[in-house]
Image 1 (cartoon, rainbow, N blue to C red):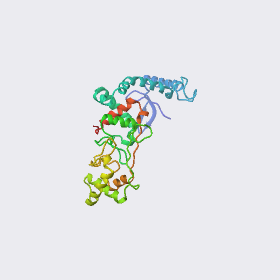
Image 2 (image 1 turned 90 degrees about the horizontal axis):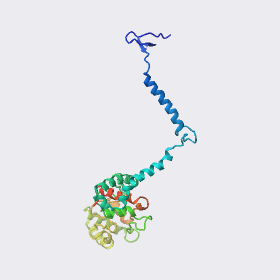
Image 3 (image 1 turned 60 degrees about the vertical axis):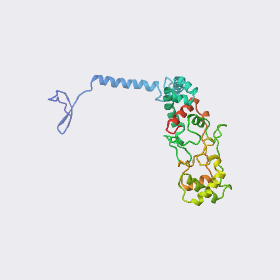
Length: 287
């Protein structure tokens, strides 16, 4: 049997347990610690009955409180708190918001969150875009213009969608559908490569220049520098939405890919649209 003795050094009783000559002291917990522990147990017992923890009263607790039920009131309170600033943002143009330090700071913070929720899936978390039809918003190459007003219009109405009658609209002909022969498309491709100093076939470039003048300059301009009024890209700056390789350019001429962007004026508060315009402009490529 375990023999309880008094420790000769500390004067404390032992528990009677001994390991390799070491005896365990019987040191009780301080009363204050025990009382606190018992109080926590009592508090927890009351809590699980009053609040949702046990399947009592439809798993809502005796008080009937749930986080889901409390959320609408909390959301309304948060909306009321934000409303004065949102009202200012709604009634102020993006350019005026950008010129006001307080409004700009608020718009950048709110726009960053809205961008992550609604835009990053296509344009990337930092607005870097992605090859395949998702333009970078952080460079100075803009299909429809990069000033605040142009960015706001694009966000508001979108591009080639059915959500808005005022959506940006541009259509490039399907040149591979009988407008040009495969050989002619190859020549135009060579000329487009020449615009960014990458052509390797001078004769094809010469033939392609004539075809480009006849079929492409109306939108892309005589020098191929594009036109924001039509959403026509600049073909001379080596920034390519669908790839810069010869095969990729030839594919874009043969059968163009027309991207679609939703109209956010029907999805977001006008204040949020203004914040997005200011935030996108601030990414580094805004003009």
